[in-house]
Image (cartoon, rainbow, N blue to C red; front, side, top):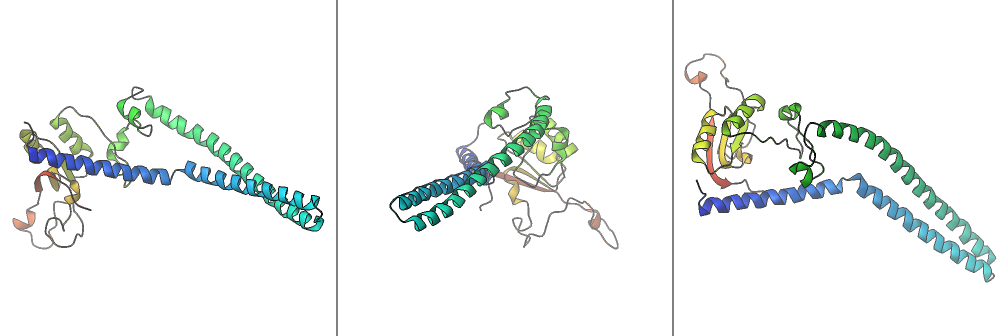
Length: 248
């Protein structure tokens, strides 16, 4: 079923928000990249070496024109500076070589073993070299980090089966313009909150109008003391949206 103009605008807003978040995460990755710190240290060492060399030349000039004591002092100080810069460069080079050899032996082995399970040159690998094939353990893992495990399944029933096996029964969402598929997903996914075309970031008490956010329970039994029909009742929240995302 084709999307309405309003739904198309909402989906475009979601895509733009995801693009901005991807750019933000990319900047974080670059700022924590050890190669950036390595380049900065090399640049600092080179600047120190250049200044030391220039001041040595100045000391030689002073010695030549007759200011022997001043020239000797300048040569001594700047020689120490230049030697320290050379030592810093050698330390960076040796440290980089040792870390590179150890890191390559570990990372290449693990990446090769995982890449062997999937065809080389997959779409994900062509998009970003950090994309590697997922394993069975990835479907159970909650990373609490900027990491996702993505699986392509054959239809909505396969997606529901995947959620039943690996999910936490916390919050799940389907993004689709197919109303029949959406209703099937809402009815069959056994999670505390199930959403259609709305961000999973809405899953907290404050967004549901219950006051301050405290937490979300995936349990189905909260009764204490006498138990009647009401105490045996559990809740499942169904959210139907048209592309809404949570601001901020």
